[in-house]
Image (cartoon, rainbow, N blue to C red; front, side):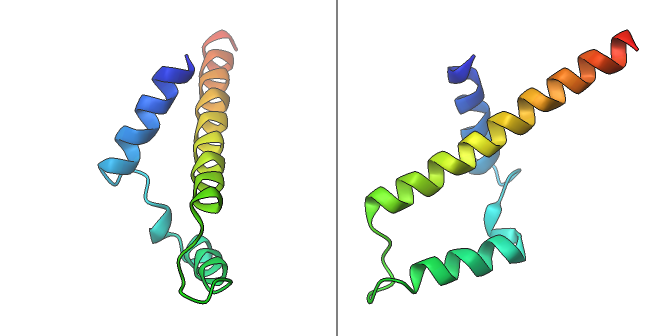
Length: 75
């Protein structure tokens, strides 16, 4: 299941169906985070943490959506 979710996440982000950069609040926080480093380059470990948290948010939303769809069918 996790591999399928990861594939869906990458499909959505690569085809711009899910573009965090379009969210003004996300972009504001991302810019603030980049400003923490002199050259504006986020260390790879921090970027990986951010990407992982984005995926986890996507996966949680997907699972919640599936549960809600199941609940709606039975209710």
